[in-house]
Every structure is written in C-alpha cells, then in structure tokens.
Image (tube, rainbow, N blue to C red; front, side, top):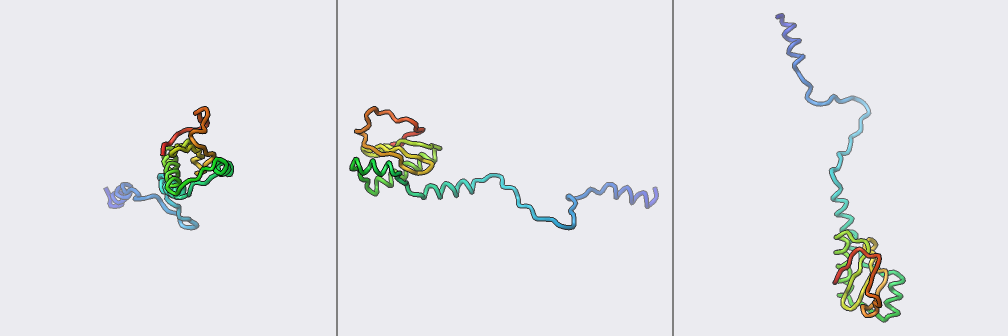
Length: 133
C-alpha cells in the first residue's frame, strides 16, 4: 500500500465532530423552554396578590342587607378564593361565618353575597366548588 493510499484510508475514517456551520447571515436561536413553569408561577403570584373585588350587584346586596365585613373576614375570604383557585375552581360558594358568597374565582370577584339564613332553598347552582372559611 502506498503512502497516498494509506493517507486516503485514514482520511476516510475521520468523522465530523459537529454540524457544519455556514458563514453569512446567521441569527442566534433562543433555546427552547422545556416548560413554562416560571410563567405559571409568576401568573399565580400576581393573581394571588390581587385583592378580592365586589361586583356592583354584590355591593348592592351587601348594602341592602346591611352586611359589613371586618378586615379579618375579608382576609379569610381572599384566602378562600386563593385556595379555590389553587384547586382549579372557576366559580365557588364561600361560606364565611353566617355569610355565603358566590365568587368568580378566575376574576377574584364576589358576584353575590347573602346571609345563610336568607338561603331559602339551600341550593346553589352553577358553582364547581365550595369553601368553608
């Protein structure tokens, strides 16, 4: 075997280490994110830090029924809404002391409020969870 043949044989056995790169207009590519857990955690933190709002209807109900909430009750209501959200609820009945609230969990908004004694039929519809605060 000649030295040229030997050299050709050795060159044919060499494998490329990486993919070839082209010279010219290349842009860096952002790495793919395996999952969006950071985004989910950020959204949850922002959502949970939002106070519970009361719809105009709920405010009217509270005023008409002469129901006032203390700061500790509001804090318990907010904690209950956060708990319902963590469980994936969208619309929840929150029972707090002698009060009942229907809450849009996704919007963190109390839709209506009443005293438990005023629940004539004791049936609540269009909710997917109940929280006893």
